[in-house]
Amino acid sequence: MSVIKHKEQRVGVFLDAQNLYHSAKNLHHGRVNFENVLTDALSGRQLVRAIAYVITTETGEESGFFDALNKMGIETKTKDLQIFSSGSKKADWDVGLAIDAVKLASKLDVVVLASGDGDFIPLVEYLKMQGCQVEVITFGKSASGKLKEVADDFIDLDSDPRRYVLGAYGGGRRDQPERRKPQGQNPQEQNRGGDDGRVGGMRKVIRKLR
Image (cartoon, one colour):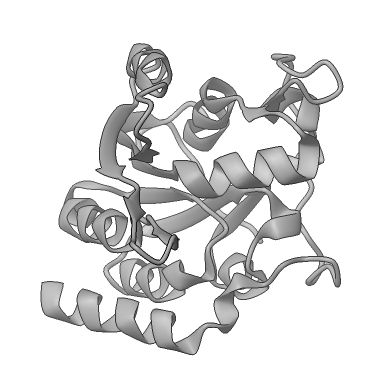
């Protein structure tokens, strides 16, 4: 992939916090370094909005996390974790994130999606049709292969766990990582774009917002 990045570009960063959290935990046994993720997502360009979409739990232990994000210039939007009588749990921000991205698209030159969820493929395709440059930054090993393909640019957080994951191999280093873009789908990737029903639902949401 080859895209133009210059300092005059207006950038919106949309962070799927749950998706990043689970990827960092499962792949690298650590926590996401959101500060470095935001820095490299911006790449020296103008930040218009940075929004993290977070699920809250009954303990409320996320408050310190929210404060840390706010100090970095990242807004937080929260949604409670739903626990049903059957014991099943549900929590996702897919639709909310998509609505915000579509509403802000006219004010942005670049949309950066920090998620590997294949449900966002219709959103990426729509934003590109509206003239936005769409970039994805996430952990490549757990990301949808199709999502990486449709994006204009892809930054793989797995390329430098020390920079992007706190607690991974002594993580938190601030030097610039070597960017490695995938040359095709890794057979170990967990492709999350296979749920046609959810992807179709996202397309319906986007059509209603036009």
